Image 1 (tube, helix red, strand yellow):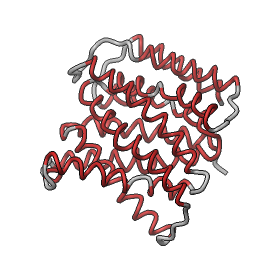
Image 2 (image 1 turned 90 degrees about the vertical axis):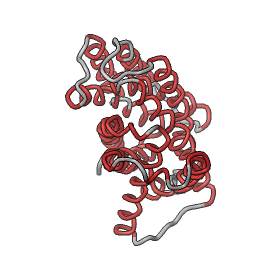
Image 3 (image 1 turned 120 degrees about the horizontal axis):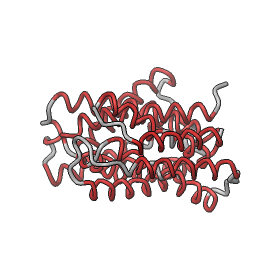
Amino acid sequence: MISGELYALSAAICWSVAAVFYKKGIGAGAIPAVLIRTFFAMLFLAVFFLIIRGGHFDFTLLGFLFLNIGGLFRLILGGAAYMKGLENISVSRFIPILFTFPLLTILLSALLLNETIREEVVIGTILIVSGIWILSRGKSTIGEKNIKLGVSVAVLAAFLYSFSIVATKTGLKDVDPFQSALISMPVPLLLLYLYYSINKGAMTIFKFKKEAYILLGLGGILGMGFGSYFFFVSLTKIGAAKATGLAAITPVLSSLIALFTLKEKLNTALVLGTCATIAGIWIIL
């Protein structure tokens, strides 16, 4: 039996690699990027679900509602802020700031989900977020446009992700993780597409370069497909607080991957932040 901790760490790996794909394909713009990645992730999960489950869905209306509220915060609002941040700052700066959301998630989990928060989880998460803060303090690097705007939307995305996780965890009480990852996507995707079509035209989303669709599609399949499924399983096994604490290793992995694939520079902040984050992971485990 695979542990919930391993699922959370697997999600972190998927999200880290996906961030690099998003950064390379972000030229399409923030909202188109969200639409493209979400569509391909949903398509992948739908095909996979048909193969494995034969299209048999089993969920409650309440579960569907909470999962789509979570999807709204995560896919539309949080997704737009995510892509806007990547447009303006580097992966190694943006992802660490984004992953300050575990602390807020722990607080919300205790207040709204009545989860018991172990002392080790709190200490470990503080270390992780301290490491993340150190990582965010590095100097401007290649491809950064507007650091203030990028940091601001990263913080906004962190808040939106926290509320999304709490809503999703509530929905997971009535729906299994595989179905949850899939049914949380169509309604938010449709709403965002309608908004984009009204402002830009219904066919505009089909006019970007082929490379953008490939990169964003691969990122969506990896991050929102596999990553969301792994994370949803970890939520059901170990709770929202511990799952988000462990998934906070994503910034370290993202920074290291960006170092080699996007030519982002290694610095003291990256080393110190990495050490603090790994220490936090070890304490939580």
